Length: 264
Image (cartoon, rainbow, N blue to C red):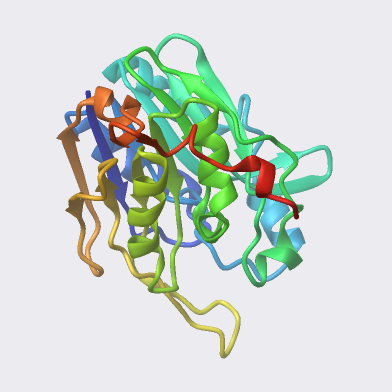
C-alpha cells in the first residue's frame, strides 16, 4: 500500500486558500492514504474561542471536508486531515477520515489538549476508533496525544495497522517518541506536521518544527521531512509487517502484557 503525508505552511485564516493548496499537493502525490496536518485549513494560533468558532466548520457538509471528499473520489484514495470542527456551540480540534466511497468515514476529536488549546477548544469526546479502509486498518490521534502511550496502545489493541497523526508540533521530542510508539505497538505511524511560524498573540511566537515522517513497526524511519519547507512524500509499505506482533517466538507485544499487575 502506498501511504504518504503533506507537510504544509498554511496562512492563518485563509481557509479556502489553504485547502486548495493541500488539494493540489494531494493530487500530485501517488498514494492510497494521505495524512494532512492538524488544523491544516485554518492555521493554529487562535486568540480566543470565538475566533476559532468563527473559522470552524461542521465536519459533514463543510467546505473543507467536502473538498477533501471530492479529492478522495477523484484520486481514489483515503485522506486523514485535521481541522477546527464546530458542533452545537462547541469547537473541537478534530481530524477526519474521508474516502472514495463513503465520503466522511470517521471523526476523532483531540483528547489531550496542549497548552492554550485548553482555552480555545472543548476536550474531545470521541473514542480512539479504528477504521477498515480495505488494504489496512487505520486509527487517528492528534499531535500532543503522542505523549500519552495509552492512545497509541488503544488503537493497536483495536487492530490498527497504521496510526495517522495530524500535528502542529512545536516541541522537539515527538518525532523520536513516535518511533517508540511504533515499536511498542508494532504499527506504522504517519505524522503530518507543518512548518513556518505564527505570533498572533504578542510574546507567544510559535515555530513549527516540520519533520513529518513515516515510521515502520520495527522503528525504522522510512522517511523524515526537513524542518523548513512544505513538501509531500509517499512510500510503499507492507501492511503485513504491522500484523506481526511477535518480537521473537516467545514474546508478543500485546498478549504478553501483564494486565493483572496494572493496578492503577
